[in-house]
Image (cartoon, rainbow, N blue to C red):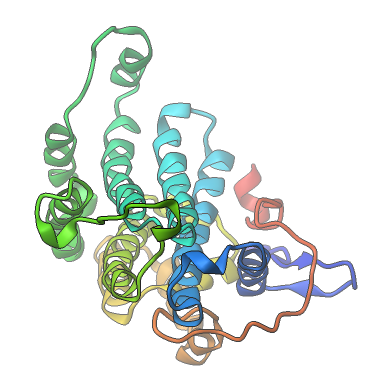
Amino acid sequence: MSLENTSTPSASGKRLAQHDQVEFEFEQFWQVTDKQRLETPVSQRAILAAAHRLGACLNYLSNSMKVKSADIHKQIFFQEMTSDAIHLVHALAGGDARSGRFYLRSVIENFWRHHYFRDHPVEFDWLQYRENYVLEITSLREHCQHLRCFNGPLSLLFSDLPRLHAQLSAEVHSNSSKTATLRSTLADIKLLESQGISIQEEIAAVLHTVLALSIFSESESFLALHVNVQKFLIATLSQDKIESVTNAFAEDDITSFQNIIGLYSKDEEQAFPFDMNTPTSDKREAHEFSIEDSDSFYTQDSRK
């Protein structure tokens, strides 16, 4: 398979790998972020950066879907899920933990919508043209539970989404005194250190799970990406989720994924920025690029 260079040229003529592209985009955002909305900016920077990286990973898959298919029902809710992940970063940077959890819950809901409507174009049209046509979240979730791609090695990962959705719903609706925000002025709106710690765990649970499941459920889009982008997505996952996805591909006898895992190494994972628990340096080299510049994300074969 012929592969193109997936890096993006900078103004200085250098080529940037995926992690450099994502890191630079976040750095641009961080420079204009109002740090007064963060109680502990140094440690909370790492939380926002990790969430941004996961959103960027979903964006790579979303862009690949648009290349592989022009059918809107097969991609729009995945695009919206990606948008939710990016809005999550913006909400947290503004000190709004509840809105961040709203977007995190919406990631799960749009994940379920995507996996229903991608296979139901007629019902998707009903959303546009039938007044009062609505599919409840419980119906979407129950449909997805029976999909073959979420059984087998990925069943435990998938089965955790309803619990996470219920937990986030309780927090979004502030059903107890523990989840009340109790702000009285605009100046009070700030992401507290305790809020950052708790939402960090939810970000890891939701976005890592959704990414792992999507790599397999949208394997055609994943395998159409350049091998370096594939390795970047894999390196973002925790080791237990890598093992679950690897087992799912092995059970389906998809050998090309096994080749990718063979190229992947722990040394490369450690070289990537934005560990969930470790703040990165504020010093960055300026480059010009955009992760939306997706022409080089794919193999030459994927454009046919």
